[in-house]
Each structure stands twice: as structure tokens, then as C-alpha cells.
Image (cartoon, rainbow, N blue to C red; front, side, top):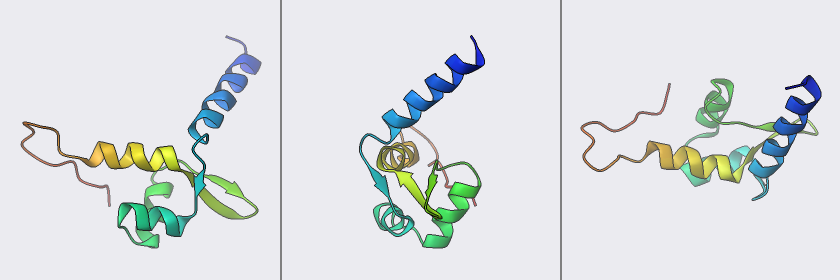
Length: 85
């Protein structure tokens, strides 16, 4: 696959991730019941994708739902998934 095709595919995927809109760090914290500092830590660790618009970070709402779903205990699981520190 050419570099241009890869870039176009990444852009299409990124746009799909943003189709539900973007959340501020404060909104993300409220949605996940986490502090602003924890949201920033998750973004810095790569656990939450984000974009920067005008110097402010924005998180795709779909990514917040996906992250929350990944933290849910699965039926029959012995241990809950922990949020990285």
C-alpha cells in the first residue's frame, strides 16, 4: 500500500472516530468519573486518543465509550481490568 493510501485510510478512520463529536477534557472526566489529571494521564499514555484544536485537547466521544466498555468486567472474569496509572 502506498504512503498516500495509508494516510487517506488513517484520515478516514480518524473522521469515523469523530463522527459522534468531540469532548473537552472536563466533559471526558465527567463522563468517566475521573479527574482532569487522570484524563490527561490516560491521553499521555496513549489509552485515550485525542486531537488538538486551537491549543486545546479534544477526545472523540466514541473513544470514551470504547474505553468505558473496555473497563467493564466481563461475565465470568476473575478480575476487573484496571485503569493504567
